[in-house]
Structure formats: structure tokens, C-alpha cells
Image 1 (cartoon, rainbow, N blue to C red):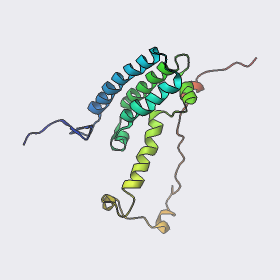
Image 2 (tube, rainbow, N blue to C red; image 1 turned 180 degrees about the horizontal axis):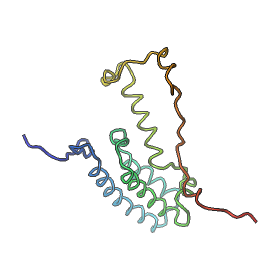
Image 3 (cartoon, rainbow, N blue to C red; image 1 turned 180 degrees about the vertical axis):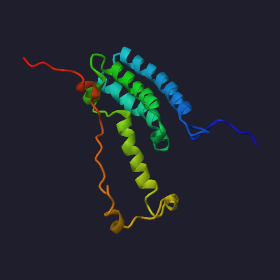
Image 4 (cartoon, helix red, strand yellow; image 1 turned 120 degrees about the vertical axis):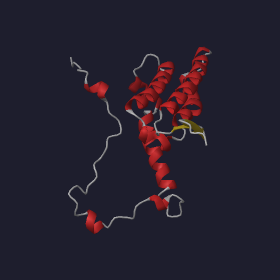
Amino acid sequence: MEQVTTFKLLGVHVANDLKWLQHVDAISSKVSSKLYFLKQLKRSGAGPDNLLYFYVMAIRPVLEYACPVWHSSLTAAQTKTLESLQRREMRIIFPENYYLTSLIFASVDTLETRREPLTEQFFRRSVLWETSCLHYLLPDKRDPAITDRLRHAKTLLRFPLELKNFESRSYRTV
């Protein structure tokens, strides 16, 4: 039997060490070619609404395809690589604006912010149901009488978006 380092399964490049470098590279290549078409649409006179529609329908699905499989295993550099593709897209549609401002105008979230609920939604629909074929993989439910007595029983809230760019700037009021 031949041993391979990576293989493609249903459009997802899986490495034998479960790292996602090849998959992120494949996504980047596909999206870069689609961004060329976005530029061509812009040159032909398409408005921001049409360009955004093309992005949401043709480009973003490529960026998010099967994300529950690989999202939680991405490195910070890989996340930044994927986010830079959306940044390029926003620069094409809204060339005068900063990235975060463009996201607000377009009513679009960052890719990482979008992948979190998609992954959670997949888990809730596919694994948590007792009729799911994956449900047996979960550990038994914990007894609340025990978990309530734990030192850190409460869960912490997470903020979905960090605005580091705005924190470092100082604004003058006149």
C-alpha cells in the first residue's frame, strides 16, 4: 500500500500530520483567480452592490468550504492568509476605505468571526443529536451536582472582534 503525505477528499486537502498548509494554499490559489474576475467586473462598471454579490456568491463559499473540519486547527499565519484574501476583495470593492470600515459598509464579518458560528452550528446539528452517528464519540454528560462545585464552573464570555487598529490610534478633539 502506498503512503502519501497529502490527499484530496471531497475538495479538502488533508495532510498526514493534519496540518492545513496545502489546503490553505489551494484555497488561496482558487480565490486569487476569482478575484481576477472581480477586478474585471469592477473595470466593466459594476457597482459595489453587484461586486459584493459576486463575492458572497462565488468567492466566500470557497473560503468557507468545509470549515468545520479545518477551522480550529489553523495557525495564526494561515488565518491571516485567508483574511488577507477578503481584505484584497474589500480593497477592490471599496478602494478608499480601511478594511474594517469596508466590512461595516458591506455588512460582512471577518472570515474568522464567520467560521466560529459555522463550526458551532455544524457541531450542534451533526454531533449533539442523539440520533447522530457521531454522538457516541461524545463523553457522558456531567453531573451538575459535581460541576457546580468546581472552582471555575462559570464560562467566560468571548468578544467576537478585536479592534486593535483603532486602539493604537489617538484622536484629537478640537
